[in-house]
View 1 (cartoon, rainbow, N blue to C red):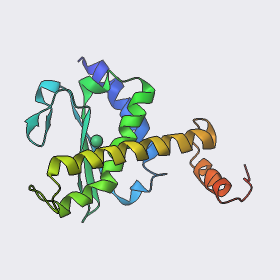
View 2: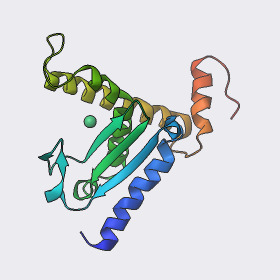
View 3: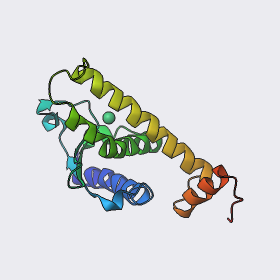
View 4: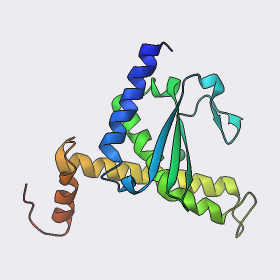
Amino acid sequence: MTDAEFEAQRERLQKLSERWLEPLGLKWWHVTLTYERDSGEYKVDGEPSPRSIANCAADWRYLNANITWNMLQVAEQDDEELELAFVHELMHVFLNEFRALHGDGATHGVERDDWLAHEERIASTLARAFVWVRERAGAGTDDITAISTITANVNGVSASA
Ligand SMILES: [Zn+2]
């Protein structure tokens, strides 16, 4: 990946960050993005994982989160796919604290991998829900007040916009 390609992909993620962090309430958190340029180096939980697009590490106690992006995989995504992946990772910021209840072994008869599979599905489901709500609210607008408009509609109050 050349410098220019890397910069173009970094900008796509930066735009998504500006588009999503505030309406999701994540300005309360300190969310950083890290960019791994060479997928041969890309690891999840210490294991090489060149086909993963991103990994979220969050510390719910201090409201810190870091999302590490595999830039070669980022470059493979069209805008719609990348947005879903981006919001999916942000959902992990919220969901990650349940992992603290879980340790490395089985808890309440549930193996860690099964637990993580459920977290993945919830993150995917919520990411789609948020993207759909936003699309319905403003047909792709970056106006975050569109979110309160759709909320008003859901509550039966007529929209002002
Ligand atoms: Zn995930």
